[in-house]
Length: 238
Image (cartoon, rainbow, N blue to C red):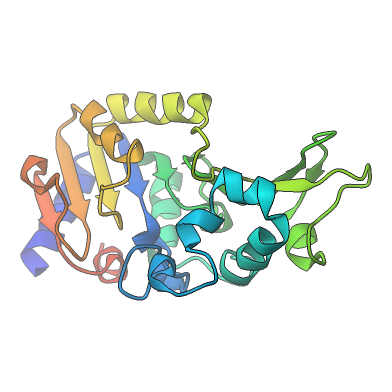
């Protein structure tokens, strides 16, 4: 493993346009649960399956139950960035990392001071009235009782992409453009099984493709380097 981390370090040193594409595994070491692992949200038992709760239909028809789950399980305000977040922010300051593409909605990359972050699935930090589109921060929503309401009386919805909703075309296009221009793509903390996010890797035609994940992914054969270890361990050594 030490040899692989040395190889990873060398690739970073030889690259000037690095894009990082991360999934839930980036934030688990901050204490935020993922979705699909043995102890993830999707394998916990609720009155309704979490996949159903986090759907547009459920949000519209069962807002009270939606917000009960959302506030209980998706509140990331008390979590702090881990070594992966902070090292990526440092690499951005050095001009190495040009963009971060994330499937996470927790806002920890920004909390670590990364500036160019494309959030494919939105963010709990942004919330809007469905009626007048007034902005509300996450604290207002998580501290509200039951369904958060706007001053106009409208219902506030988190700016997160629920099941049955489309990704933001502008964000996706920015992500694709960043990947196309990259000379190194680091894909980490994701099983690369969720479409359409998983398909973005196909736009990379640069020099180094690195996959870092505890388990194997369907794209391992395409990679120049595969590291099956914790992100915290890998990034603490570069």
